[in-house]
Length: 313
Image (cartoon, rainbow, N blue to C red; front, side):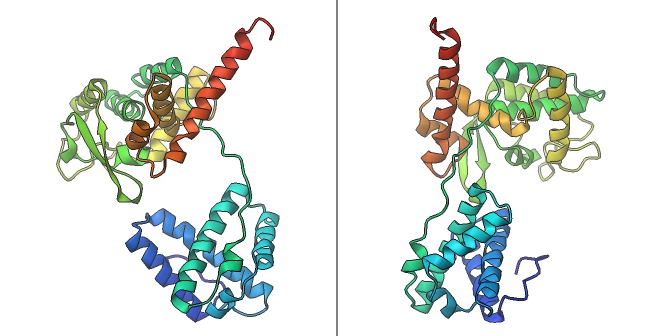
């Protein structure tokens, strides 16, 4: 099992072995991230532990072959009863169905009844981007956000990358000295180790150059590009704390996080006429449906403007 996890007593050794094989297959064949594997393990441990208690005997491969929709609904009801949200439960059931399908292929049982169960419906929440003027104000105030000029310049550089290139904060902070100087396009390795090319705006390149000019740490090929106060790779929580202080100064809502700048990048690009397929590639989304959520943001903004400006409102 993943290091640090303690299997429940209801998990039989044979099932624990099968679960580990499935996790290994997901990690290797589908290139899942460490966080995804940990989440999958938690999902399956919860499910198998429930089956052990529900049937008063540890779950075995043959147990999965006898599952019905009633069993799946009972598990879903138990999870909702523990306070799991519809969105989290849908993800959990998706992992469970993947495992059951994998087990049925290897043990030759019919899992159609269990796989026919549907997850709960939930409304996908819309991203909460900043307005263009808010994003620019944030970048302006970042330059004065710390008494150490090089730290203020560092925060400005990272935030400019998030807003100007649509990077995830983890993607920006994984850059090394070998990535500098930035070329016209930056090769980013995102979720699932998928690589994509992201154009680099001159303003982002200039912001990083200014940070490096002021930084007490030299640029080294195998060292992090963005460093904390003691020279180690910058921790995302440090940037989140700086963002918290800045948004309070500007009177921005709690949703104004570093990740909101990535949402702002996509939303503002869409509003300016960018097409969804291009935005999908820039963000590194595996599915176009993930990117389509930004059309809802744009529609919501247009409707808000309409309601505020229409003579009959």
